[in-house]
Picture 1 (cartoon, rainbow, N blue to C red):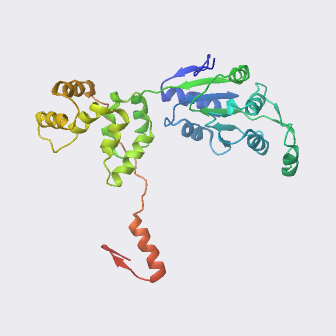
Picture 2: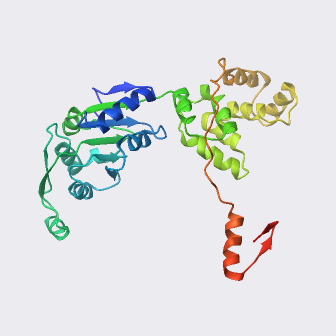
Picture 3: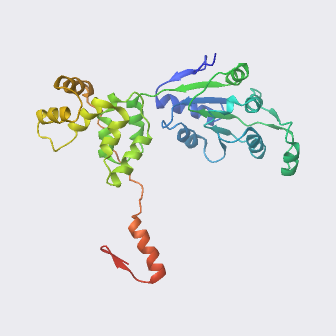
Length: 307
């Protein structure tokens, strides 16, 4: 039976631990690191920052044959296989992983089919390399003994940060205090948290779209979501008005409202974190359009913008 978590995986929960393992691989102390964790937790970014520019970065959607070609072109360089959630299910992919992830410093990698394509590209059917490998995956299954053999060649790390841990790390790079604090006050509602939620909410905020409801919808549903949205609606001046709106919108009775209100209220205040990061530069599409018109038609003014 396939296992969703490798038998010998080490579970880590903090970014301090993640940084240690990634640095250990990037500096050459580990031959193989298999890093597994849900999306939006900065696995790839952490590895990129640690390893620098001299690395062969291969997208997991690449075929086993394409990876073999990349390994030849970048032989002896560190190799990162990113998002390989299906590669280990491919027979040729697993065979290739077993070869390049061998524990010996110098590994022999071979490809015995597609000879004509290899000859055309000037790639040998067998070569040696000293590349060390990092495998990044959102999920991993020990499908068979061959996959288990790949796991046995290195360090398998399962990264499971709490929402609070993700929130703290996000504070190192995020820039919008209002969005950041809104999510921070609701950390107890998220079983899991993705850093992408912060950027997505900021985009909606800039577009004038209800970003608060978007965030609430990512952690609550049904009557609980309705209660949260009513509590965040400044048009209501009292709890009684919210109760009546809850009933009118089909959320349930008064008792249901207060049961959900109690559940979604955090008993612990979120940690105060002051952001000091500058937001990315976002161009105004109106300005870009007017610049284009100016280049084509000369000076143009309109909508309060004069070029």
